[in-house]
Image 1 (cartoon, helix red, strand yellow):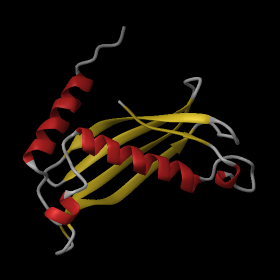
Image 2 (cartoon, rainbow, N blue to C red):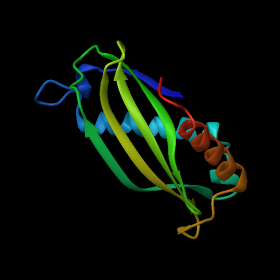
Image 3 (cartoon, rainbow, N blue to C red):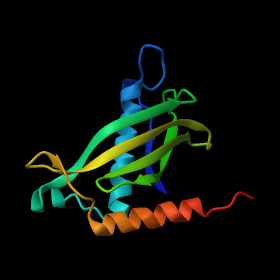
Image 4 (cartoon, rainbow, N blue to C red):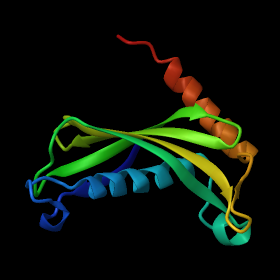
Amino acid sequence: MKTYSGVVYPAHCDAMGHMNVQYYVAAFDQAMWHLVHALGYRTQWQQERDEGWADVQHNVSFAKELKVGTLFFVESRVGQVGTKSLTTVHDLYDVSGDFAASNEIKSVYFDLKQRKSLVLPNEIKLAAERQLASIQHVQPI
């Protein structure tokens, strides 16, 4: 699913003239929030339940540089469902559809007050498992 769209501004570029790693990660992070929302998580739970997410691992791969003015988008999917964690995969493409980068993020469901992991809420776990099953059943043409 499409989870984020953006444009590369001059302030996003590093000394090499392309988008800096921190802005790729920021786009992936925002995409992750849209994905977990689609799975049933609500940001209100941060205040209502003291529950949220803690990223414990990011694996970023780069394939193409993005220059100033480049429009881009991120497509996201569930990669793995654990008892207390969710692994999500985010692919970033330029506006023409050329693959530019990906990020696999492992996020632990988290008690924000006690600072410890929690079991994934059942509705999120089931929605993530459904999405993962639907992805795995897609047959190549």
